[in-house]
Length: 75
Image 1: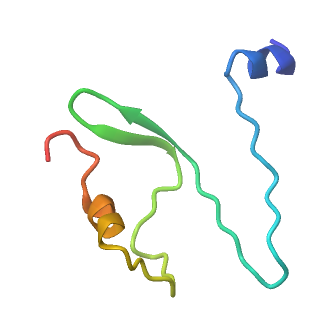
Image 2 (image 1 turned 60 degrees about the vertical axis):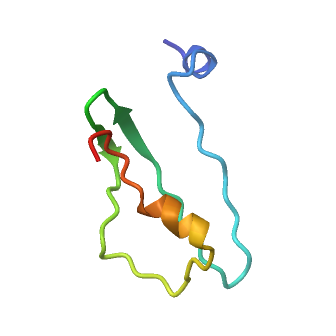
C-alpha cells in the first residue's frame, strides 16, 4: 500500500512537529493501548515508571483524584 492510502484509512498517524521555547524542555510520550473487557494493557511504547522525576506539582485536587484512578476494569 502507498503512504497516501495508509494515511487516508487511518493505518498511519503522522506525528506533529513540536517546537519548544528557547531554554525549555518538552517531552512527548505515545503508546498503543488495548482496552479489553477484563483489563487495559500497554501493547507498545514507553511504559512510564517511577524513574522519571519532575519538579512540577499538580495542585488541583480534582486532577490528583483523576490521576489516582486505575485504568483496570476490576479495580
